[in-house]
Length: 318
Image (cartoon, rainbow, N blue to C red):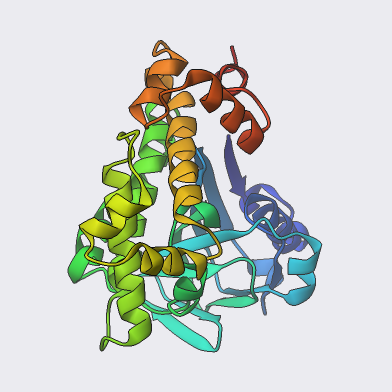
């Protein structure tokens, strides 16, 4: 899906309302205000890269608000990443404010109120991601919303230039590789945010989160092993099985459920990958640790409402 919005094609008195409704359709329902609606100018190019929605937004001064009432009306449960391309942005959420200049990044959550203020003309890349795809503790991410992530140091210095370049080439991404690119971008964002979550003096909670990240990374590296089990994971991290169960219980899940969910998600990604259309379903399942094809098919259908083959036909349009 792609979307192109230009307010210049709309009569001046109708431009700002057209902008507000179009942006709400692209992202989530929003309230927008400006002191000069008749002089407003905005342009948006939006694209879907698999499960990732990306948009380059350029406009004159205005304020955007996501309110409790709008959240109650429609809440898809997404995170949004803002990458400032030009101009200035002030984001407020969860009692914090992030002042962004070109190259900076930030994260905010559509399930809670936020405000975006642009006091002059600006350009911004906005990435909207289903919360489930980040695979980071929601309570931990809530602690870094509306914080400025510099594009000039750490992982931010590596990722920011890439995302800035992405904004300039969105028109070229409408092809088979766009789904794979979207998945890779999500993985890079997880790396960036995980680094951000580790910043600061170590506390009992930060040590627990760090252990959880290491365990999840270990699981990701060993998903292809059908014999992967909690006891082996605990031993690899020099902790007891009981401690391992506890850190996952605090996240509202179990070790086994997490392994199953990650395997299913990887299989789902491969099944919608145009470059893997000729790969048998059983091979994809085995690649991610499912040795029993029939069992895999039942799990997949229970999770996504369609068998692996039905899902592949639906997303490929075949």
